[in-house]
Figure 1 (cartoon, rainbow, N blue to C red):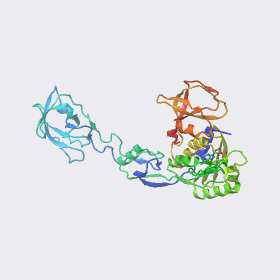
Figure 2 (tube, rainbow, N blue to C red):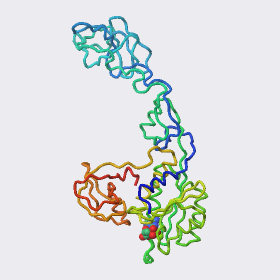
Figure 3 (tube, rainbow, N blue to C red):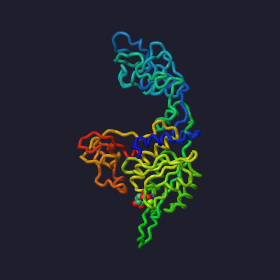
Figure 4 (cartoon, helix red, strand yellow):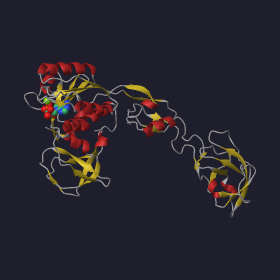
Length: 411
Ligand code: AMP
Ligand code: MG
């Protein structure tokens, strides 16, 4: 049985890389950048004002204040170029270009009129400055944010809105990103029916499928194109045919259920029967011990266990990283954060365990009472998964632990 971390390594090592395509900035969120985005010109491209006020020459403020200067001209954002006349100051507004000769800005709140209120237009009026001025104050220097030819956004970045905004700043209307994988989700089990199709008096033990829609929603967060296949009966031939059909349309087939060792678990034999090479089929983790990874040609198959919590947890730690790694994501694995245990627990050593827990703003993680791998309600109520290392035998309240936010996991 593979350790959790070895299994994650296997998944990342096996991930085939997708090709690239261009997308407009509005379509780029969550996609993975497939090029280095360089800065074609200095950002900002000119020295400008970061305040509403007056553009001045710092050298004019020698000796002791106050200093009075007449106001001549105006520089506003996007406006025509202004000039700084000798021994005068120029009105300037946030985002406006600094007039040639000016090297500092005085904010307007610090400027008064020596004769009372300023008139509506300050053109030609004297303004009084009481504070000394240092060169460069309230000036956004050309290139202060990014220099020409600097790396603005690195290949392999999963694009957040801040990256997309920066792409706009460096004058890009489109970006080269990885294509997203085509995923087919295929649920197995004679007991499954679609949600909302219960018939009265049905006592055959059918259940409403919950995993398919949950896993599909998670996969779509990586940008994947997700198709959902019809339910597959617990029958070897039907399972082989279903995988064969799914593999024809998918870069990754995600199956749910049928991967353990029960008489009706057909996934492993079906995969072997159609020539899928299995890389592993068991991982030392809880929930989720049976977990299959296989490959045929360029396509991968990941077989998740059927219990709803197991399916979502294994998909969060193996499926999502796979779909991200296929897109060249430099950071495909979810990132834990530190928290403190809200209560003690005992743990049977052997498998790494993820406990569903509440997490307070203060970082106190308290495992919920129901840790059953089928308890989807507890997963939905939880904020985070607490990592209980495989070798751990007990934890005390207050112990530091790694936790994964379910929001961050995309579950
Ligand atoms: P299996 O992994 O097929 O042995 O299934 C384990 C448990 O998960 C059983 O109780 C199944 O009924 C349940 N299960 C399997 N597939 C699904 C599904 N798609 N939605 C909800 N529960 C499921
Ligand atoms: Mg089953």
